[in-house]
Image (tube, rainbow, N blue to C red; front, side):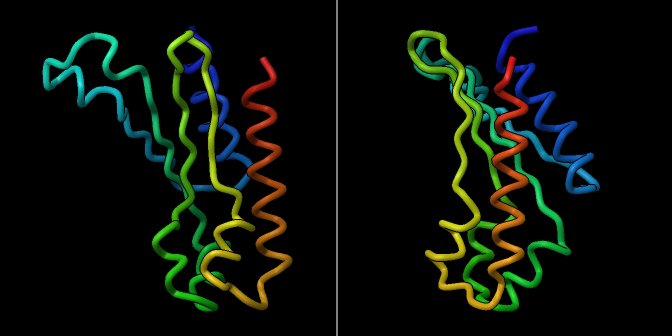
Length: 125
């Protein structure tokens, strides 16, 4: 199993367990180039994991509905030109600040901490 698959598996299992999600959606964003007959190196492996928890997200949306543009949360797993695999995400605190969410500091901090812990675990191989 490659590093990308290991990260995806670890994150998927970790998310399902840590935040008791019903489902984690995975989108193979690199596949589209292959289907359109693009050059082999034009689209490197790229996966987007989309996940959410209504108990965590609903209070944020009640504070400021525009955060719905960035919820559910997403994690991007991608491979660079050198074959190194990266895990990228926007911190929930950044999203809350950008959308001017107020009165949800504890919930936002819990999301920040939980996502950071999952990212560390997924990339600890």
